[in-house]
Length: 331
Image (cartoon, rainbow, N blue to C red; front, side, top):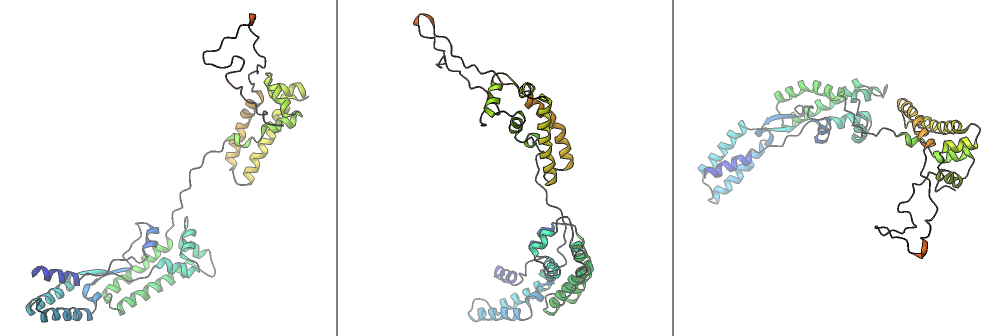
């Protein structure tokens, strides 16, 4: 029977769960450094249950006595245990509303939009940025008024005592100041790869073709015969290789400058890239490809069949494909 008494007593003193002033979502956004003490107060269980609830439980116990489930002595013991526990136990009750939502309301926006604006700044700075209609001082005043009103309502509803209300009111100013002046962290930016110089060289083959005034096929044939673009330029243009290098450099530089103008590159990145294009262009202009052998091997004397290579390849067919030039697919 003692176990029954204990279970009933414990069931009757279970209180209200703890909820922070800023609301679960807003508090999570602020992080663990934001205090959750302002919006809640420790109140005796009796004050939370109200004066009518013990009478209700007494009615239940009276019915159990009438049914013979428990004796009158046991009912008296249970009610005494409840009264004793109510004086000792306490629960945390929600008092103040979500002040972040109240801040959004004062600023004339939604919680979602306000969250989006906050990284790197504070509620106070956002309010001052809306002057003269809004200000940090006005925001603090609006939040203080809302918090004070909530505390008064909690006292009127017997959720907290006058002393608890006084303790909460003493904390409100500091908590609201912390909320309003806190600078929100900026979102970490994803790591970006350093720009590759080759991405800004453009279609060098097209620029070279325009400079040389030759078809892609003619340029590819010349390169297959062992000529570099620089040598081909020397053979066909008065300013030769140097003129080709200048044309390619001008094209690449124009692309880098355009990227800076479109905020795709910083000035420092552009300077670094321009310092690299010279080497890339020189490599492109002076590169030589292996000479393609287009002759077939002579037929063996005496009508004998040619020796088949060990790998089974056709003796008249190259075993590897030659490296393609940048002009192989151009018309």
